[in-house]
Amino acid sequence: MHFDDTLHTHPFLPGAIDFRARQGFEVIDIEADPVWRSTHMQHRLKPGESAGSVPRHKDR
Image (cartoon, rainbow, N blue to C red; front, side, top):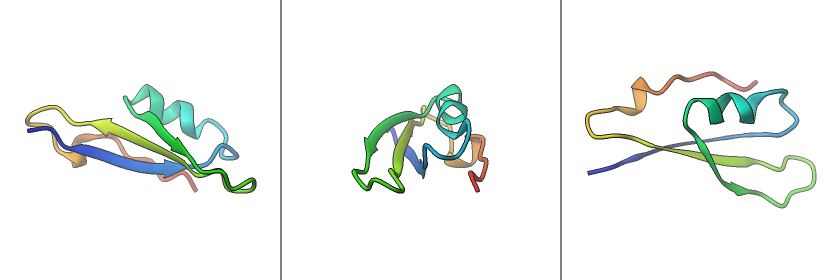
């Protein structure tokens, strides 16, 4: 069974989207809000991998 780990970040945070993409996250949605443009990302977890094993970095 596969589970997904999801997060959101914003394009005004320097390097945040690229940082997550290098960790295997893919963009699944970008909100239309002209200020925040929240960028939702997802990482498909492999069997035996837990969400806690995916590197975390607070984008604040």
